[in-house]
Length: 268
Ligand SMILES: [Zn+2]
Image 1 (cartoon, helix red, strand yellow):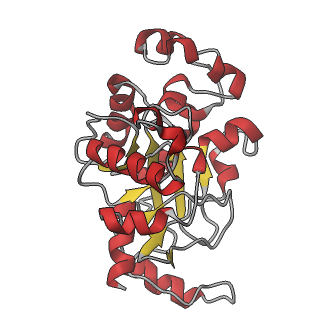
Image 2: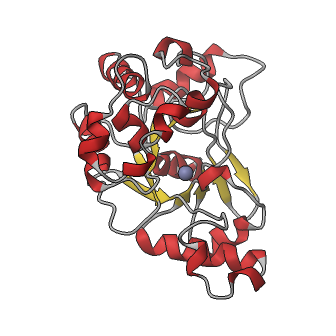
């Protein structure tokens, strides 16, 4: 679904803000990405079917083993925090070096999706020491950097041969800040630059409008029936997500997986 025509249009518009890098994809491409966040498979399937119904392919950053996303891309969502399930699997974790912890967490999460070539860290954790480990285990891109609602975003190279694909919007950001009111028009999707959108399956499932509503469902996080019964009415994550999917489908906007963006950057 990548379009060279979009690239040409990008160059033709011209602006001092236009980056020198011009890659072979629509510079206004929209990428649907998901931090799986330990969601149950039925909740993941709900998001999947909404994408599949509209022929949109997304990227799912997985947190655990056995996540089935069908034709969609799987990346990694490593949790480096000390209360994380993967961290706590490491013997003598408290006496290990940071690099040992990073390698353990990344290798473990990679075993959940061995084909993955990209990652976005839980809690957006970043340390430049991760990059050589990414390279060593075969990861090619990172999507951890989030620049909320900043226009003119485009991928760039980091050290150790890693492509950074910055994230433009996250449901969690909106849930906390109430920045857009969960209204698609406030996401400024027509502004120049790529739009990597980050959603969480549980937040979509319950149509979370704010952190209090989300927190109220944590005790039955893995119970799809109770979650469905708690689905919020009115503006919220699911309503926005559906609005965005329909906007993309009805306006024939270009979409891509982050793997496709990474490949285009590397070919460029
Ligand atoms: Zn997360």
